[in-house]
Length: 315
Image 1: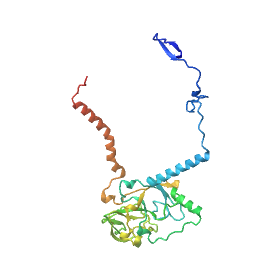
Image 2 (image 1 turned 90 degrees about the vertical axis):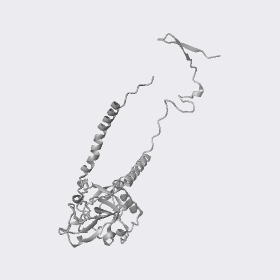
Image 3 (image 1 turned 180 degrees about the vertical axis):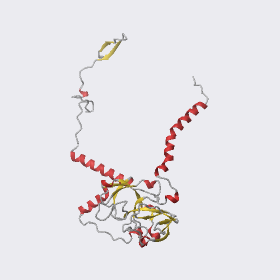
Image 4 (image 1 turned 60 degrees about the vertical axis):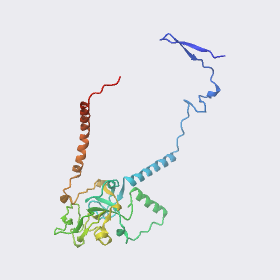
């Protein structure tokens, strides 16, 4: 027999609607509100909370992964181990060495320019006579050293250096003129950042003219009388230059200690002879372009609507 259907009268339309009469809940529907297939409905049990130790491990793992990605592709913190960049960067004996943030992305878009303070891997000519340091025999101490290097609380590598770019490929550099200034392409440099640890320049400052090969940099320390740089590394001359491929990044900020939080200047010592503009002036045309883009776009659309003939719609 066909099941009966209850009749229900519609209050607004005066018509009758038919609704099926539900019988007892079938066994197929499950018990305790379970749906077919064994899944629960509204009474679904709350998911089990993960143990605290597992959450901590996940948190630490994510933090380490993010740290690795940031330091590998964006930037990382380096410690300054020597006084060759005094007083721009502190690394003097007995003082707290600066920790600096190095931008690793900037040179994906342009080459280093005179005045940039850079971190770079020492070329073979700089490191060929270095004495290898013994690794700690204790495995725990060795792991601590590597971890400290990874997160920036220890020198990342004994063969990494920090110096300032003085000349680039194709330029000639020499020292000195009558006022003990470095010359690039025969013009004296403006170097307000130079620090004379021993009171003034001496014979160690002088070096013969060098033409910097294309694709390389001539670098020098700001502590000009106490810096082993392109003047001396590898015997000086052409062997003292740094290939562009060895550059790691540009020093942007001093991040530790807190008392020295500041940006690291990149005054171009050749600015006078190149008539280069300040950083904000270089970006000014780009800013004007973005500011004017929207009004120009709106005016173009209005002009287009006014000039095009009206097309009647079909239908």
